[in-house]
Amino acid sequence: QFKQKYCDKNVPCLIRGLEKSHFKDISSQWRKSSIRQIEMYSEPARGVISDACNSNAAPSANSQTIVNTEWFSTFVGDDSAVPVRINNNQPGRGSNLDDDGRAQECETMEMKLSEWIDECRDHEEQFHASGRSGERRPRDNIGYLKDWHLVNFLSQRNESLPSWPLYTTPSFFQRDLLNDFLRRYSDGGDYKFVYWGPSGSATTLHSDVLHSYSWSYNVVGMKKWIFHIPELQRDNDDDDGRGEHYNSKQFEVIQNTGETIFVPATWKHEVINLLETISINHNWITAANVDLSWQCLLTEISSIETELQS
Image 1 (cartoon, rainbow, N blue to C red):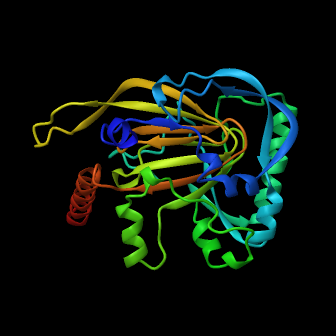
Image 2: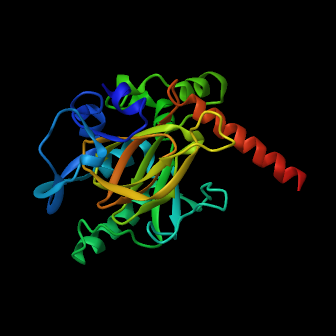
């Protein structure tokens, strides 16, 4: 169902029910309960997979789960360095795209994990004390721990963990040419990340690297995704008719704790953390989008050649 309805058609979807199977261990270890009551966004389950564009959530009251920081201090280590990005461009007010539509690097700083945990705690206390819990707008100058190769790091010390692996990739995401290639032919590289951001942190408008697919599982927290719908039309220079131009049409999806979202190739999107959120994110390439990835590489090579000649 997933491959035919969403992957082959290259449209987003929201997936429920995986936290009790593929993500059971990581969910139980990285979460703890909080007495804070917040406005959550949920809807009655309509099956395992639903169209992302039809996921208009209604608010309901639920007790919040928060990040179990003690787990990270114990098994990752307070002195471990983590990559924190500072992004000053808010969704809806511009983006980090250059003139050619590529994502530009935002400011990155390394800090100790203990410093990051303290920063998140202080931010959340101020955020909730101000009565902005669940606010749907991003905020400026907030750190966001992004592109953290935590699972790769932990694989070197898995004997000390309560369980390993922490999660298993769902079968419909497993035909992964990108990470299989990197595992065989690179020195430990991968496109498997952990993202950890406080309330109000955001990722500005972008599409995913190499025109890959991606999926994101919310271990803790809540995100708002803003998808910009690509308008397909034939270009004179595009023999297969898959040139994509973006129009003003967009829609929003609320992703709650325990839900997984599929992000199709080439779709530009923005993401805002409505609460402190930690997620597992994979980019992957399969037979259904390898042609798009190849075209992306050819375009990048052409751009590099042009720059070298100028």
